[in-house]
Length: 266
Ligand SMILES: Nc1ncnc2c1ncn2[C@@H]1O[C@H](COP(=O)(O)OP(=O)(O)O)[C@@H](O)[C@H]1O
Ligand SMILES: [Mg+2]
Image (cartoon, rainbow, N blue to C red; front, side, top):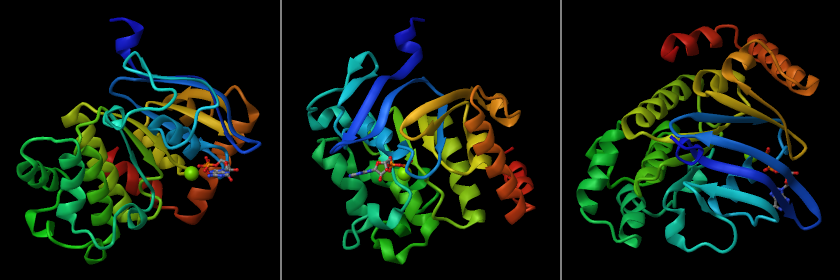
């Protein structure tokens, strides 16, 4: 296999500005086909901006993003976004309050002129663990976890190969978080997906990811395997402190949390 087919995505020296402010500076990493690549970092470190640049929601000021060998820079036609989809933290804001679930799921399929919209929608509802009885409900008639299942289903409508998950479980109760993470793991396996997962929760990152980048002030300061993360083997002292303090914090607030998570999908 060549490097291009092994890597689904390559980000080389990516720089993104908001006005004069560089939110992402010379970030480089690649995502291997089939892996979950994690991004951790304090609030404001540039994690979401990287995902936005990949999905075309933020302009690329410098560097290159290549997916499946094709460069994604510059103005992109809508169809080129089909292969990469973004799932946000808050399923309230990502679903239109006056559109039914049916509409939320069938609209992208119709826009892209896919066939069998009807069976796609019912298949997707099943795949995310919701039956057809949810089809004509509105977002406010669903729980937070159910809404996130719909947001995940919608990200799958166009059959992408890469899903960008921006804090996908941060707005949910701990018990529901584990269910959603299990669902994501299952979908990844059955559909052969690759993920980039942004989270500030080290136990989520450590259970979901193969490799992890650590960001600080718009820069990637470390890239490690999940084993290295668990052993606190970083090249920068910043990463070691960040991960260690976040593990200690999680243990302090929820002593049983680590056990719950490892039992459920460990
Ligand atoms: N649309 C925007 N306009 C101006 N500044 C922004 C915008 N989006 C993000 N930023 C700034 O860029 C930095 C990185 O933001 P973000 O990528 O959202 O961080 P993270 O996801 O790691 O919390 C922050 O300082 C944030 O305030
Ligand atoms: Mg963010």
